Image (cartoon, rainbow, N blue to C red):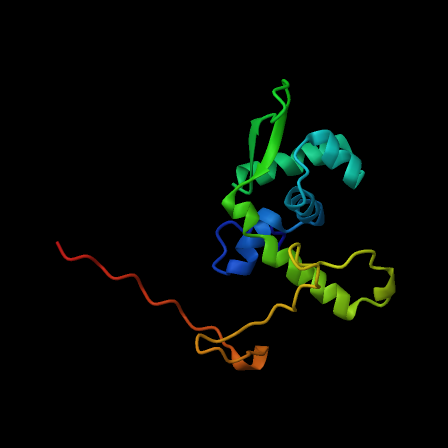
Length: 155
């Protein structure tokens, strides 16, 4: 059995993304950041994480460009963790995980919240995979094919 310590150079984009956000603590930190948590103590309080684990996960998320540090918005000496565009790009991933759980969880009645549109207050529609022409796609409608080689520039 091969022990893998990194997916960084893997050719699979799913494996590569798991390198940056593949553990559950990181996804929960991103979830909290999407809802406005910015300070170390707030993350620790909301998630109940040990300081050393939280510190390591925040450092990794900063190293992967998902969060960045910024001076505290209240002018204090603290620093805050702010989502980057790459970090905000995880929103559909978290929504997909949430909707998957709402569909397949053994006890969906225990899910305490509903994701709603802030403006209308209505539940968010299920994510869908669509072809370029708008057709709804299932896994059977898709396949992987090799990426075309990059064009060489002539001198």
